[in-house]
Image 1: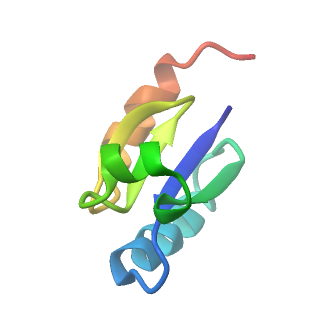
Image 2: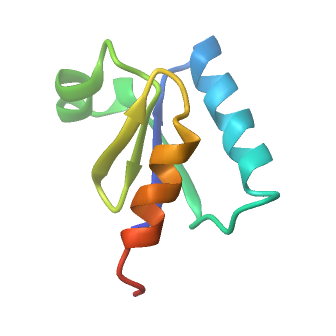
Length: 82
């Protein structure tokens, strides 16, 4: 599944998190990133509507609002290779 960034159109925090992930990928090997529009899926909107951006790894919450690089590193280190 990899990384999923749940975003919303015209969301400045979403753009910042995406840029932070790009920067982090320069120093850390990250799984492929998939962007998902929270407003295109009623379940995602119900679950994360006011929390975007939301970063998921293999479907599990890593962080929301701002990138927590240390938490992402921690969960990646525990990830079972596929």
